[in-house]
Image (cartoon, rainbow, N blue to C red; front, side):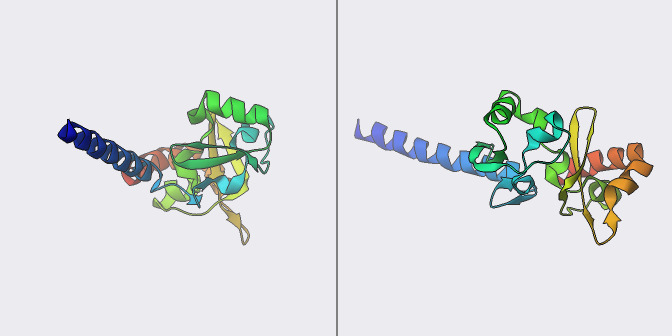
Length: 154
């Protein structure tokens, strides 16, 4: 009986370590600061209000090791009903940089595009709005970004 209890304790510890490792694998390539997605912006607001809205730590959830903030309880509920629908593409990195150079480049949360039900975020600073460049050859950049992200996020 004692050996059985030891085995259960060991398995529980192993399961916990494996869960943490799986979570780390899911988030290792994501654009996060302290496990916070999109600099604390409400990912649902991009879809429901067509604008970037800062979320609140008081209205938040954790999905696969990533913290998401929301501007309203209803947005939190929408996210919980279908998280993948609202998650940004390419781990929240600049879509243009992912397509052009397979690079992880920071984003400006207020520079975004919703296309085919997906959220794309872009770098926009120092007179360089990458959304404008993306729009000039979107199909090509998107195709390359999809391939590059698949390689990076194995």
